[in-house]
Length: 438
Image (cartoon, rainbow, N blue to C red):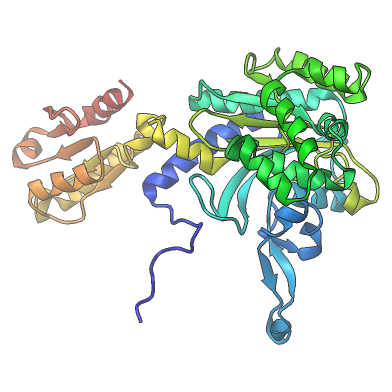
């Protein structure tokens, strides 16, 4: 029997080109997050199962990867651990555990993998990275505004110019469900269906609501409003009353957000639901035209930490999905040349066995100037060495043959243009650097 060498469904191996693209995006995200005062945090890949269950809603709980008991307890078939489903619940556990060691306003970022027993699709995997920011300790709308600004700056720096940030408030949405005469006991299941509106459309949501037992006429009224008036915040005010408490907070977030890096990107979307059950206030999601689903999302969850601590602590967070960002950037060829050209700036060839020491010395000289240098490992035909460099997408090749050695020079070939020039060996690094930066 032949063992398959493919990774498990929904997971991937990352080859060097993949890693370079991932590191570039993570570097941009980390740099912006830190600029906004967020500090790094990491948590274990798995948690006690009771930490995770009961936090995501019935639908999402089915996607938690459970870990069976081990050793003498293996035969029980019971699970006591689970792989991390998101980064928000582990953060809440950390805040409860270290409450006396953390500052009054704790701002953290976390860039780590999570696991979900989901059906793989384009940009959707069972193992994927989330890039989170969260702010703990304040109910001020400034919290949401700063996070929206940070996320907008990340996407702008990565080269996205067509993203939209959709905003809603769970309190508004819940109240609207009530105004449509949807039974409060069915609100959670209705939210899960509504969250799929942009993926399966009104007809698909209508069928799902019917399958979940939601009253057909109530569902029809709701979908009519969400499909035709989802950006009309005044409509919500008319339906719920201008004095509805969440309205003022929501309008303030919208007003202040226009003073940030995301100016012009924000859109009210009363149909935005965000499927996780722990959201309590403002919710947000970033979309681009050519991706089904979002590049990221988040919201306020003022009650989640209380499930660990015994008292509520205000909290709000936003998560960017690294995998989806990479999918879109790859399809749009958005990566800088320095990221796509490979890990090596120049290949130093080996002319013959007698020149090995000089080639190694040349490579060392070039590295000391900051260049990324690879030395060909064998005294092979130059044609083969050039072919190897081309397969590695190396832009420059250094050749020090008998004539060059005699004159104290080196030949540098630019594989991108085909040009080859001979120069004093001491000038090679400056020449290559100028060409790379030019």
